Each structure stands twice: as structure tokens, then as C-alpha cells.
Amino acid sequence: MAVAADDIRDRQRIIWDHFAAGWKKWDAALLGWHGPFGDAVIEDAWLGPDSVVLDVASGTGEPGLTAAALVPEGQVAMADISAGMLHVATEKAAGLGLTNVSFSVCDAAGLPFEDATFDAVLCRFGFLYFPDTRAALAEMMRTAKPGARISAAVWGRAAQNPWATLVLGALVQHAELARPPAGMPGVFRCSAPGFMARLFRQAGLVEVTERTVSTDLVHRSPESYWEFMQDIATMVALGLAQADREAQALIRSDVFQMLGRYEHEGAVRLRSAATIVAGTRV
Ligand SMILES: C[S@@+](CC[C@H](N)C(=O)[O-])C[C@H]1O[C@@H](n2cnc3c(N)ncnc32)[C@H](O)[C@@H]1O
Image 1 (cartoon, protein in one colour):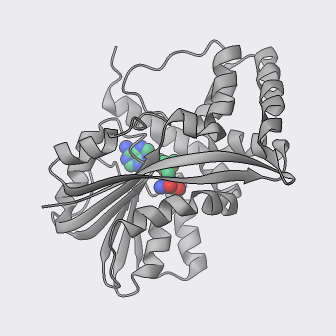
Image 2: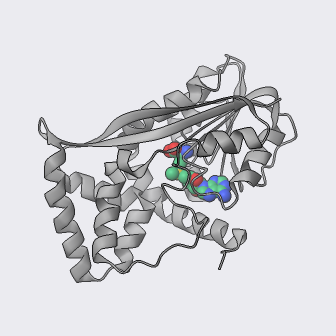
């Protein structure tokens, strides 16, 4: 049975409020790892120094905070459903001395902005979690000016993302996980090649491009990777919490054994690939 959009939104809000502490703890690691994906999203948004920008599902502030430094005569509005995640973004903005930023706790499908406000809309790893991707994109388009760019990142295919599949695969093998109903949020929900470009074209965007950007998730030890995943990867942490102690021990042991294959030059290096999609509002 389909899960109601409001239930998905409420659950996402609770989950991300809970994980905000983990995202704050690992902020430097996340900035480094996700940096190339945010840079690509910004590059495809064609910002100018006075651009007025919206960052949807901004979380702890990226790519909005990076964009704010690039638009010194412009503004960046950051929107997210989780007050906890956005609170970390406000702290970071203050620490960076940014004054051209604002924050709104809201749903992507109900943005509190006037029509045709923004020169560019950014969204990094947000579409994975919206109950209705079309409704969220329609809101981005409504609030974007004609000629504005909408630029987003989602995770690429599972085979290109061992950083996630290593633990998720072990979870499936050892724990009786409830299968999520179709259309539920998930890390690989938008990963089929062409999925995002089709969504953008069907919504009426033009000059649509889709490309893959890859980088490595690097940790100094298997223990560091394991701790990081439990603190920031919602699907992993929630899946582990469902497993009993025996299954948890088996999952950990399998993951540590497999990590041996990914150790190079004294560090664990796991491939991570995202799809960057962008289009122009007519
Ligand atoms: C993986 S985090 C990405 C955060 C940030 N953009 C980044 O790349 O570091 C996903 C974010 O989506 C937000 N989110 C989930 N559902 C949402 C919704 N319906 N509307 C707005 N934000 C939502 C979560 O609160 C969370 O902050």
C-alpha cells in the first residue's frame, strides 16, 4: 500500500532532526567528500556575482553556503524540512561571516517564496527524499525566474557507490529488513540513468544536461568509516537498528573483511558517484 506523502515528510523531518548531530560532528569530512558534487551543481547553475539563489534541502548548508561566497552582491535562501539540520547551517554561516543568507524550515513542495524570485535553484541529495519529486520540481520552477537554472545532484547507480552498498548489502544478507514500499525515499531512488533528465524535461525545463561526477570517500581506518556511516547514513543506521545483536555483529564483521579490498596507501577509499542534472526554466 502506498504511504501518504504527509507521513513520508513527517518521518523525514524526524529522521533528519535526529541525524543533524552526526552531520555536525562529521562536517569537515562531509565537506571534503561531497565537495566535488556541490561544485558541479554550482557550475551547472551558471551563477553571477549578483545571483539570487535558492538551495532546497540545504541540510547543514551545502551547496548554499559555498554559493553564498560566490554571489557577494546576491542572496542565498536555504530551505529544509529539518529545523535541526538547518540550525547547523545557521551556525556555519555565522562562523563564515556570511551575511547574504537566509533560512526557511519548509517542505520542498511548499516553498514560502513568491513566483519568479530566483536566478538559480540548487538541490544536492534532496530529490532522494521528497515524497513527490514532480511536486517539488514544480515548486522550484514556480519560484525560479524565466531563464533561471535548476541544478541538482542525486546518487548514481548502486554499482558505482560501494561506500553505501558495502553496508547495505551486508544488511540485506544478515537482517530481515522490511522491504520499503515503492516510491519511498532511498539513496538509489533516482539513480537509473536518464531518470532525472526525463523528470526535468517532462516538467518543461530546456537545455537539460545530465552527467556523472565521481570521487572517493576516504577514511583513515575501517573503524572510522564504520562510525561515520552509523552517524550520517540514515538508511544504514536505521537498518542496523532493526537488526538483532547477532546480525549486527555479522554485518560488522563482513563489512570489515570487505573493506580490505578498498585499502590503498594506508586509507580506505570507496568510490562514490553522483548524477548531476540541470535545466533552464522557460
Ligand atoms: C542527504 S541530506 C542533504 C543535505 C545537503 N543538501 C547536502 O548535500 O549536504 C538530505 C536533506 O533533505 C532534507 N529533506 C528531506 N525531505 C525534505 C522535504 N520534503 N522538503 C525539504 N527538505 C527535505 C532533509 O531534512 C536533509 O537535510
